[in-house]
Image 1 (cartoon, rainbow, N blue to C red):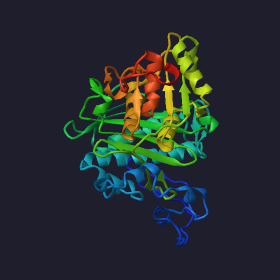
Image 2: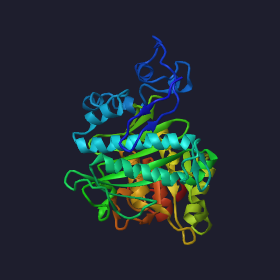
Image 3: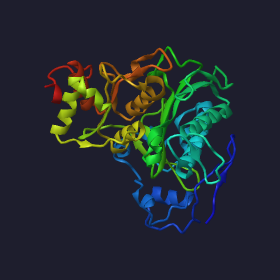
Image 4: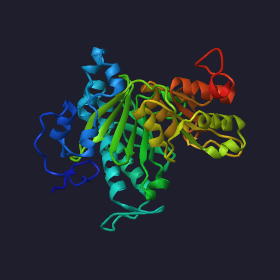
Length: 391
C-alpha cells in the first residue's frame, strides 16, 4: 500500500491510505470507469458500485443542452468550476476551500477526539477539532489571495485576509457544524457562504455568489452551488485526494421524511407541536442526526423531505443567519427546494449582524407551504386552502 501527500499552501496534506489501481472492468458505467481511472476504488467495493452515473434530477435536465454539455458527471472539481463560472478568482477560492476540507476530513477521521481536544497518533496536536478546522479554513482563505474578509463561528469578527475588494470576496463559515458529536463518530460538516466584495452585513443570502458544505461521514463530499449555473453539485473525495463530480440536484420533490430540530420548542409553541404531531400521524420517516449539515444534505441527496428548527419563548433561535442559515438556504434553493423563516425565504432576510440568529425550514415547496401555514396561518408560496397540519 502507498500513502499520498499533496502539496498545499498551508503545508502538506496527508491523505488516507490507498490501494494501487487495478484493471478497469469492461462493464463499468462511464462514471465508474472515471472513478477507477482517477482513484484506487476497487470494482467490488461498496463505494465503486454505489456511484450513480446520472441522478434522477440530472436525467430531468438532460435536454438542457447548454448545461449538460458544460458541467458533466465525472468532471474533476477544477474541470467543473472552469466550465461553471468565468470568474477565475472564485474558482481559486473554491479550490482552496476544497483543499482545506480534504485536510479537515483527514483530521476528523484520524484524530482521537474528546469533547475538548483532538490528538493525532503522534500526540503533537492538542486542539479542539473545531478550532483546528477553523484554523485550516482561515489559512486556506488567506493563501487563496482573493478573500478580503472572513469570519467564523469560532471567530465572529471580521478578519482581514489581505485579498482585494475589487474582484475579491468575503466568506462566512461554520468550521465544524456538529462538533459536539464528533466523539460519537456521527457525520459532521463544514458550511460556508461567499459574498462579493467586502460586505458581510447589510447584504442578503441571495447576494451570495457561491455556497458549499463539506460532509465528513463514511464518505467525504463537497457540495457546491454557484450563482452562474443551476443546481447543487456533489463531489466525492477519492482515495488519491481528488474531488470527482458525482451528482447534480435541480429539483426537490415531495416525500415523507422529516428532521425536526429544537424539539424543546414544542413545549410552549403549540403550532410547532401541531406540525410535529402531523408528521407523526401521517407516518413520516424520522431522519434526524443532531447535525445540521447531514440533516440538510439528505434533502439534496434524497431530493425530498423537510428540515425544521423553530424557536419559542423558552427555546430561542440559535442558528446563525450568516454562518449557517443563508449558505444552506442558497444550496437548497439552487437545488430546486425552498427555505423559510416562517414568512419569507431566508435568502431575502437582510443580515444585520454577524451573529444574528433565526429559525428556519428547508424542504420541498409543499412542505414549506405546510410549515408557513401551520405556524403563521398563510403561505407566500400558495393562495387558497390550507394544507396538512394547518387545515
